[in-house]
Amino acid sequence: MIDFKKIDTMIDYIEEGTLPENKTFNEFAVDFYSATKSIPLSKYLRSKERGSKMPKIMNTKKAGEVLLESEKNDEVKTLLKRNGYSSIPQLNYKCVMVLRKVDLYVNWQKLISYFTGNATVQEINNSLKPVLLPGEVEKLESFVKGELKLNDQEYNWLLDKFGKIERDKTLAKSLRKLAR
Image (cartoon, rainbow, N blue to C red; front, side, top):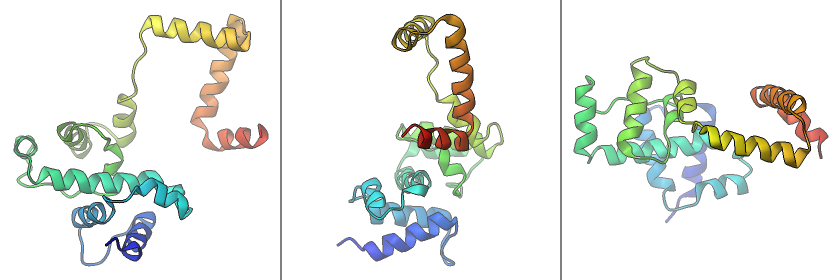
């Protein structure tokens, strides 16, 4: 039986960035994963209008899954030992933002990179963005120019403005509201 009160309480902790007094982050994340693995969590969050912290909530669930699977995975244990961890290290709300639906080993490589200070969460996440091949860039460029009927100067202006919009969330939200 699914205990939705327990799930809602756990979501409150995640949204606040806190933990129950008697639990470590790892224990909490595993409990959260166990409590939510049988429900479509993103749909549940949207239905409860709690989507504002969805990435943090979903990544906490993913952390629980990674931790649970890591306990049984010898390859991960070996990786951790090679990097100086005698047991599974304690995670936190910040470092779980590097977790993705990829291989367990890859997730731990990213976490270790974060723990050792080799990269920040943002640097790790940006490194995952695919790099386009020159042919792909040309195709996309000609498509955008054709669809919007732009010359080279207008195209470069648009890219510059679009880059600024992408980096400034407030500006992007304002433009979305104006475009309605």
